[in-house]
Image (cartoon, rainbow, N blue to C red):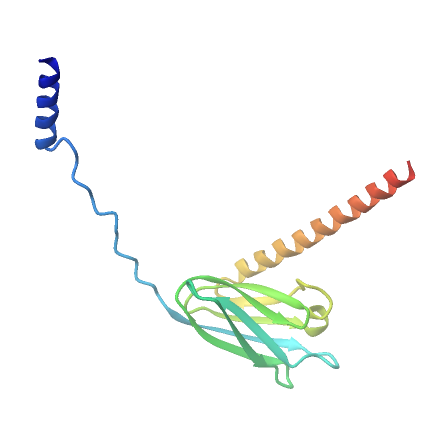
Length: 166
């Protein structure tokens, strides 16, 4: 009899709305603000400097897009492309890479020496425009990691040398 009362109470509770109705978890997606990004720059050319500069970025879920531009005799170049969200893009010249932060409708101007980009992976550069400070912070981060990695390697080699003499 007690079981029947429990079953009856459970059925009554279920029929009276004891379980909340499922709610819709799908929300409307925010509107993406697409916009054209313009990146222009000036390369201080040296004798024999490369004449091609590349820019690499990814779309939302697509593969990478690579754009290339010719550096003119005055060292100037320009890229224009559309994006739908903020990106960290890679500007590659010779052996060096400049990681830049851009959002839709941004415009950046970058200036660097060809010799610096021919010698190191994350060379120094000057940048002006929207979010230029973030791009400089990204550069500082990469330069710090390169330095820290070099120090760790040097310490490991020293340690191996000391152990090898014992």
